Length: 212
Ligand SMILES: [Zn+2]
Image (cartoon, protein in one colour):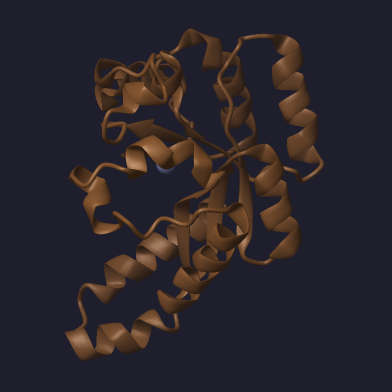
């Protein structure tokens, strides 16, 4: 996974040195991985999708209405943009279904609140060893009213550091009127600087922030 991402980033950085026509040509040949995709029921986003401002204004009025259509469109967008694989998180059942349908296109990621319980971490460990998960994230801790440096996540981070499992964090905004569907969301809980504590405590943890 880390190697996949490193390859993708290195490839993109290299592309910056070419002139534009060559970029278009080269983009078709690199192994681009999108590390921020969600397999979720669109019904859950009816409220934020009804707003026509901010980050959602580009897609306003075009949101899919059912999970099957969302899957078809996700694959179509990946093909159009030469994305070979996508890391998906969200609804566990949908994530499993998408991976089953397109095992070579999707990398499943574990996305849950942290309860700090050893049995929860042990369950994740056995599922990871069985190949059910390839990463942790996108952790949307602030949506549940938890800060990015929530100590309840530390046992999970310890495990991730030990096995070199990448961890992805949601930071920043929560979309238009986030409290309409996640009442506990606070922007202060999403401050990327809160990850300083995590970086100091787990210096070898492979992390990435996913703004908005
Ligand atoms: Zn996200």
